Image (cartoon, rainbow, N blue to C red; front, side):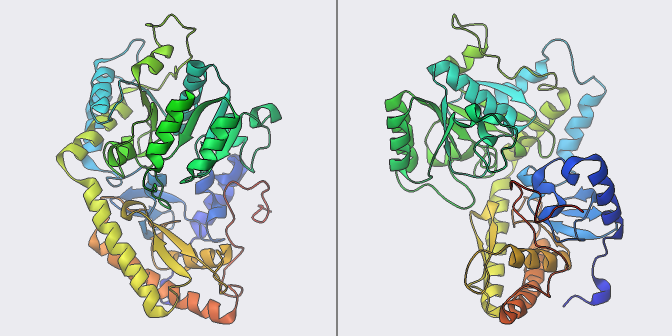
Length: 447
């Protein structure tokens, strides 16, 4: 068990976090990174990372999971990527005309993606998904978008309008997005039969759900029958399920696919790839009205394209996905075995694809619980483990996994005491975490 005197201290991080709230709305540039997603007084402000470990402003070292919101699959400060970036720095970064690097990066990326003929690069995932929506609307002459009921697709109005946290989105925009359920072909069939839909956008699979037999094939068929563009969001599945994304794993080809996160191993780059006849609507080989397609100042700057090429090389020469799958299996088996030993296996479970693990935290009645989730996060942090889930990278070692299993076992001993007491109250340091995309700042409003 962790000694009281050995627990991490967060005084410097707390001071920095208060300053962040003064100058950055929400205190972070991504809602998932917000301090309200961590136990109060225990939200480390980080200063550096190496491999699968990070250090905070107080000098605490943590084994990190989620790894840059799933963007770092090769590990922090991965040397071959950094070397590739350094090699281009002295040659300048942004130019008035395309570079040979843009061509090479595009060709190498397209060789990875089955069925894609053309690509445009951007910086964030929303660049790509929102461009896919615009292309689909232009290609079909329709306005409505069918969105799968999955967590997140874009920061832009077309998607945010469908969330609870939708202040500032006109009602007219909100009405242009309709929903269907994952692994439920009838729900999609009903949407397409009752509406003129420009595109269906979805993740082919998630950490929480794999496609049922025939589901993705059925989606492809329904889109073809209704003249609807099929868009796969490969932000998480790309370079995590397979180098070629979920479409390479499941054998179903979308018309357009959207990529990001792992493409740059932390460097900012995203991509929209797709069939030539659709992509050319934003080009110079069309007689149709042209689509304004991802025209960005920094979409093709040299640093991120060099990082992309180094990442693709690492995947071609090694087996990062195999390593992530192996470490993930070891972690899931170890934590779930510890839960059984402690007697909380009905309340704490690790599930999902081994390379993209989640943990569930339930109260005494078996219902998902934010207070008990917070308690588990709190006790992991006290034992040197940082993460809102157990998403691994290829840099996680067996030592990292063993430390995490030990930390989880000790955290679950505290968890069991709270279950026996009937509540996490009295075990938590502060208020529970809250959903990141909620309508109001309460219950974690900053006072």
